[in-house]
Length: 96
View 1 (tube, helix red, strand yellow):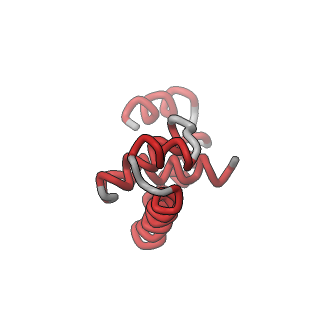
View 2 (cartoon, one colour; view 1 turned 120 degrees about the horizontal axis):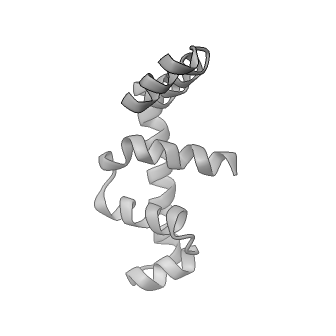
């Protein structure tokens, strides 16, 4: 479950860098909770093709994070914000 949430967070950050096909398959699989077979049937491709596209998308998302560190930075910022007083914390959260 944790990996799934992590990949969804990465998709929020880097999803636009994926191909349209990878975005569609990723969204169907992770957001619509469709099975590989359901996606394959809807897209008129093989189940293996869907699996490969989703795996490629996951690898690309991990690659982007390994090089850009946006997720890691967001986590650190949230930790810092939590340590601030309530008023300042609220102001910063509104900006984020």
